Each structure stands twice: as structure tokens, then as C-alpha cells.
Image (tube, rainbow, N blue to C red):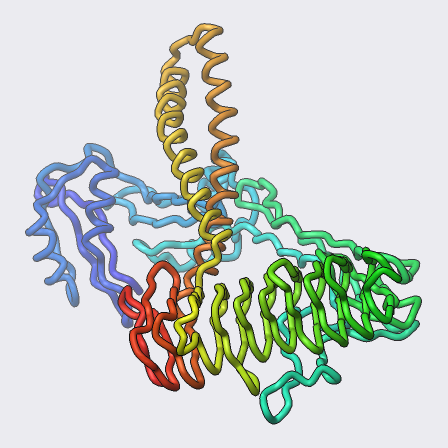
Length: 529
């Protein structure tokens, strides 16, 4: 049994009787004594109380008080409700000598009068009254936590990873006959399955107020042509043999448009699906496809735009105006005097005097494996065999920095600062107005209208601030990995080549073999492979 204390009258003076614990119980805590004396408007000498507690570890001790209650104090308790209103605790204190004990009915009526009506632990309360433990937090009531539901999710039965790498031959060149990056499907194949949301169950706090579970996200199957949706709306199947891919959240199946060449016989091509060119794409023509573009020959000074990947088996001579743009990856035998931009990676056996931009890596690491001249930008790093040339061709490599992401981070930081500044100016006014209203001050109609407008502005700013901060945190987390990117050179890096990693740069001063260029302590440095 825990140690406890009670008020007594010792020689006509108020005092405390300290009763030691038994059977391994907890001794009296000085904080409990101070808390009780404060409640009863009593006072004692703190050093004397501490000395008395030390002496009361194994025997009763009487401690005189400097000031005591004029009443014979009843058994009492201090009630605590947790901030989330989910638990109610009581700490009981013994009655003064000659004082009345508390009845269980009084406690239950007090809980009821305070509005506490849910989750009352009557068995625990009964146990306490049968075997009282003073100065101990007793759980009197506990609410029911809500049961959280599950978000809906879609299970795709095909590869949705646009970063899948092509097959390489033993010499490091790309095997254009076995790319393994197209998702073939057959008529009747299941493409996607929707697993519906499971709503949660509401909880309840100790005051009987319901607690809503978090909202669950719903989802629907989005799809294009050549696809069947099951009667229950949960399964997508293909109507045709073709290719399947995920485009901006929608499942897309298409037959492949096949042509021999893109020239005067075909004109420009704009196709809702995949395009396969068995021959060449000639200068000044364009090919646009919502899916993949595969060219088995050569691309000259043409424009190619794909919602998926661009694959050019024999390479591209852009003639200074040829452009490739892919939301997926770009794979070509070579890229010369061309502009190529991929949201995924770019892979080629050689790059000559071209402008390359990749959201992932740029890999020019095959049999020839050189980048000479031009500008190569890759958020995910560059792998190359030979970088630059002995003739000093103007070659720039930039890695680890996504300009669009950097601009958005700066924009969000400005928006967050503006919202915080606005809230800092609004909230003191709202607090002052609330205090006036609580004090009984009557506001004029104009003042009320002004307070209402500030309240609306405060709510709107708070919501937008949450949205901006969430996006900013996500972008900062993504950008934090920029320091790990590097430029790997498996052969030679020639002098005059400029290497930029994030916000720092260097120019190669001498022939450098088998090395990595990394960002370290605010500088670009050379390290061995």
C-alpha cells in the first residue's frame, strides 16, 4: 500500500500525519503534499516537509504546519481531464482526522455534473473504494478512439515505372531488339484492379462528443480507348492486343501505328497511341504520339514528341534544329547537333554538340561513350566514358539541380513568409477582440464586421499556409538528395570541360582518368571511381 498523509490537530496546532508505505508501496511525494496544502489553503515549511518525508520512509511522522484549514477536511480528490478529452484521472487525498469519507455516489454525481458521461470505469471506481490508494492517479473514464479507415488504391497489373532500364549487350551498347521497356498486353488481359476505400468508425470522448475518423481517399479507374470496365467498376481489361501504359493517372491501351518512313508520303504524324517507324524520319517532319515512338532507322532534323519513350535505333543527326521531347526516356544510338529533353533518363552511345536535359540520369557509357561539346543537364547524374575533347570543345555538364524545382521552392518560401506575416498581424487583433467580448464590452457593428472579415482571412491564410508548407516540405525532401549525384567518367575527362553540381562548379584543368566528380564541402572535387 502506498504511503499517504492526512491533516490532524496536534496540541491545538494544525499538522500533517505522514503514514509510511507498506508491502513495497510508493512513498509519499512532496509534490502531492504541496498540491494538497495549496488546495486547502494550508502552508508548511518546505525544508521541514522534506526532512519529514525522509523520516517517514518506515514510520509515522507528525509535521507541524505554519497555517492550516479551519475546517475538518473531508476526503477529497483532484480531477484531471487530458487535453484530448479522452481520459479522466482523479488523485484522492485522505480525510483529515475526524473528517468524513467520500461516498461513491458523490463521485459519480460530480462526474455527471461536469458532463463526463462516456466510458466511465465503474469497476475501477468500485475497486478504489474497496481498497483505497491515495496520492495515485486513478483512471475514472476513458473515451473510445476512432477506428481509422483505409484509402482506396489501384493495383496496376503492368509496369508503371518509367525508369526501367533497357537491356545492354556485353560491349555496353543498347540491344534495340530487347529493350524490355514496353508493356505488351493481349485481348482480355486484366490491366488494373480498384480496391475500394474502407470507411472508419467514429469514436467518442469522455463528454460523449463524437470523434470522426480521418477522411479516406476515394479513387476511380480512369482509362482510354480499347479498354473494358467491369460492371462493378472495379476491373479494367484490354479489348485489343497492343501496349498498355499509365499516362497522368489514366490507363491507356493502343494499337501501334506502323509506317515505313515519315516523309512526304505520310506527312506529319499526330497519333493517340504508339508509333513505330520501320525506316527514317526525314528533316522538317514531326511525329507526335501520346505513347511511345520507336524509329528503327535514323532521325534527321525533325521534331519528335512522345507521352512515353523515344527510341531511335540508328541515332539522330539534328542538323542544329532537330528536337526530341519525351515524358518518359530517350534512347538513341547517337545524338548529334540535336536538342533532347526527357523527364526520365537519356541513354546514347555518343553525344556530339547537343543540348541534353534529363529528369533522371544521362548514360553515355557504351562502346564509344563520348560527350563532346554542347550542354548536358541531368538531375540524376551523368555516366560517360569520354568527356570533352583534346581540341577543347566547349562542353558543359550540369547535374543535381532541377531549375523548375528550385524556382518553385523559392516561390513557396516567399508565399509561406507572406502568410505567416499576415497571420502574425491578424491573430493579436482577434485575440484582443475575443477578450473584449468575454469582458462584456459591446462592439459596434463596424467593429464586428471588421472582426468577422479578419476571422475569414485568418482561416483562409491558415489553410493556404498548410498547403504551401506541405508542398515545400515535399520539394525540400526531394532536393535534399542533390548532393549525392555525381559525374562518373570511365575513361578520360579532358581539360576545359565545365562540371556543375548543384550550385557549385569547376573547370577540368588537366587530363583526368577513371574518376568521379562529386560535391564535397561546397566545392566540386575529383575522386577515384
